[in-house]
Image (cartoon, rainbow, N blue to C red; front, side):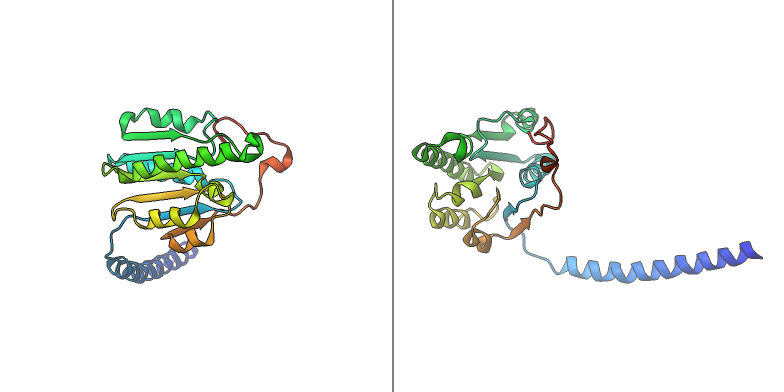
Length: 209
């Protein structure tokens, strides 16, 4: 008898779950059906937590999976050798990669040099954004260049807003400017709950670069 009672309870729970999920599916289907706009997005990954660039490259990989072309401009990390650059090289000319940075400002200690590097990187970014064969442009650490006023914020935001309708652009880096956040379609703040650096763990191959 105990076994039969248990089975009855399980059946009731299963039926209750099915009914609940059917209602949930109806709500979800209606919500999805109500979304009819298709457009290029301006995406901003910011915040103190790790993963801003990693998330951007995840979307780049997704885009490549659909046979699209991707452009990348690195505003700060140009001198770093990174695993993702080597990995994306396997896609040949479907990935256009420009590592334009001179390193962080505390490394170069040369304001004019930093500004010149940022301006050259932005010029490359504009070229990629104008290339109609490219579906996604990643502007890695552009937020850092804007934070230190290496570039004119209003001009950069105006150019991003004026991009063609079908182009997706991802901007990464901490401390995104409010004007950029306002212009963006999607903003993700990467929170910092815990970081291994605070425990003395150094940057490691395959994790940080």
